[in-house]
Image (cartoon, rainbow, N blue to C red; front, side):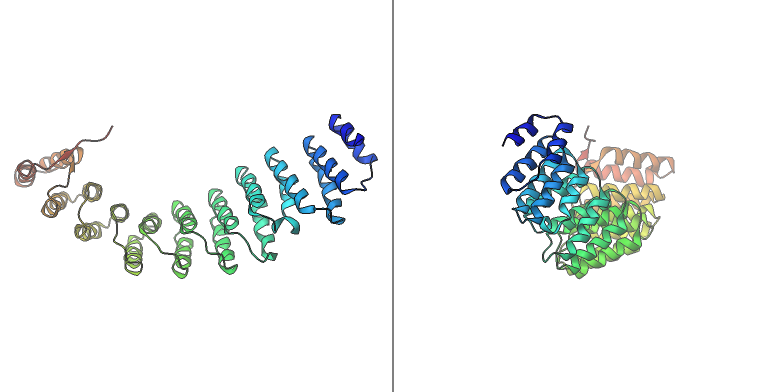
Length: 343
């Protein structure tokens, strides 16, 4: 007890000398000196006592958890990693592992987190949140291929990840137009028991839109909606139209708009199609889109800036009397809501 008190009151250098001069013979003393080392942030010395406790079977798991949590709070990622990768800790409760993962992610230590994932192969059960965190960190640090590898590890380990994790990997591929790798992730999702949804459609569409393949985006949108029995929503249709417009596929954009009419037209999808027509020079088609929308839903609103721009371009092209005026007459006659932009 005297030595513990002396060590507690000592400077770091003096504490090291106490550790060097003292031979641990009892479990309680070992635990006390371990706590002293932690309070003084002498984690290298704490590891010495921890290893002794492991060697003598002195409640090593509790000591490991104490060292790990303390090192994590102090931000010592390397110490956390040294403790975590031991067979004693990987089998402990989830809270200890979550604490370590939090340090890795905060410091973006992909190298350490990946080692933990590899080390976990020897365990009987691996918590899903370990794979979840590793995939998210891999995506955040530009390691899309490593993220896909970990998806495979999770599958082989019998771990079913949440759909949101796959979405994270898919979105990361989409930001870099990595269509091949993104396609492999889509196949993994289709082979899993997951139920895909409109968010999956949006991310898939953005992936193939960025890669210049709107036909693939349309194919998967139809496949997902048919297999998982859901209707494409406004966000999904808007993404599909945007992908077509960005790749000069105007006819496909208009076909998508016609398909969306079956489920009712919202201003968002209407605006996306009309703006797409602007970009591709399909002014008369843009007017036709608005007329179709009004035929289906007289209550649908038209953004004011959209209407003004369309009328201006029509008059500029010499279509004011023939095309623009009838459109304005109908909008006024039907008392269609003209939506002002939200500030």
